[in-house]
Length: 395
Ligand SMILES: Cc1cc2nc3c(=O)[nH]c(=O)nc-3n(C[C@H](O)[C@H](O)[C@H](O)COP(=O)(O)OP(=O)(O)OC[C@H]3O[C@@H](n4cnc5c(N)ncnc54)[C@H](O)[C@@H]3O)c2cc1C
Image (cartoon, rainbow, N blue to C red; front, side, top):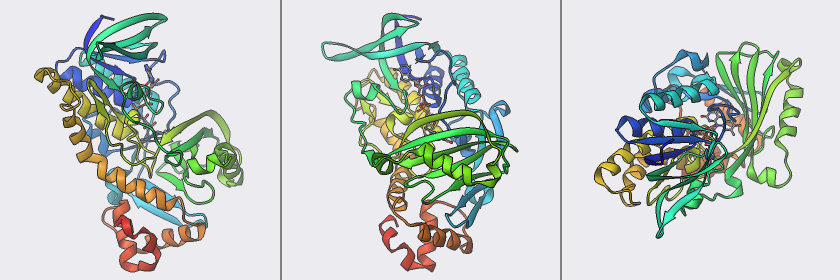
């Protein structure tokens, strides 16, 4: 590892690897650091991925990291009503269940092939400043303290990000904008490997239960609970265990692994940049508040941050003002969707099981070309205005 780089990317997840790749492809001298000893291990993820991401974030398809190609998604109401979203209607919203460990490693390999240095077992411990200006990062590289200079830091250090805090970017979110998740990989169960499934209502207050197939007898079965429920003592593991115990398709289930973690489900932050610093992915709180999906946004924002880093280096300007170009790029793509889905999440968290049943029933009656929160609400409003009275402001 050298002592000076143009760009240091903190975190070797999808956001970090994509940022490192695009910065290196543009000619920057890039170091990506990952605190774990191996990229792609212990990822906390249901592994669902929208197909459209690949074009969007310019990620080449590699069959080795695809576990299942699904035809669509099923949303199941508390009373057992099912709304099926097939691929033709859902467009980019359905796609693959991936092998996240292999996916993360493939992205890191693309970054390395583009010329980025990659160091594992290397943690950022603080921002290095001289005369009040950021000049690099303090690192611990395989047990040894080392200071490395750089012009730009890309914070891709995930949900528990510290880079933003060190740089003075306000990444705080309200407890209600945090979803607490627990997931098992279960085998010896009956799985439809052509559909991802989502179970809403009181089985997972403020969130949902997901079943994402890995193959015909194995799936990621997880739950996200709303922050307000967890604050009142709600335990996601208990909710999930109770749901699995009642599910006849899982009566012989055996666990292959278990992960737990937090997920931000907030409205977009006001700013994700500071002088010499850009945040991407979960560090920038870019997870979709309705679906909890964050891989696509991490890759997309990583791509934009990498591209803007290259331009900033050429312009000799790594200021917060210059990084407004990055803000514009990611906001143009996903800000409106994040905001609308955050508002929808706020509403959906409050609806009763009975209303859920009605809504899912109605969705089956309404034909739609494109499924989105907006189109769903609009269609319901056209046919059953009384049911969406409290959702009016979303439209
Ligand atoms: C239970 C669960 C299920 C989920 N399921 C899905 C799903 O099905 N589909 C989906 O799209 N999204 C899902 N998500 C969200 C998804 O996992 C994240 O949005 C995605 O991983 C974000 O990528 P990232 O690169 O921003 O951050 P991460 O993947 O979290 O990567 C951050 C990396 O930074 C490293 N790091 C942290 N601090 C430091 C430091 N100081 N120095 C060096 N390295 C550091 C970490 O070790 C980590 O490898 C799920 C999340 C949870 C919790």
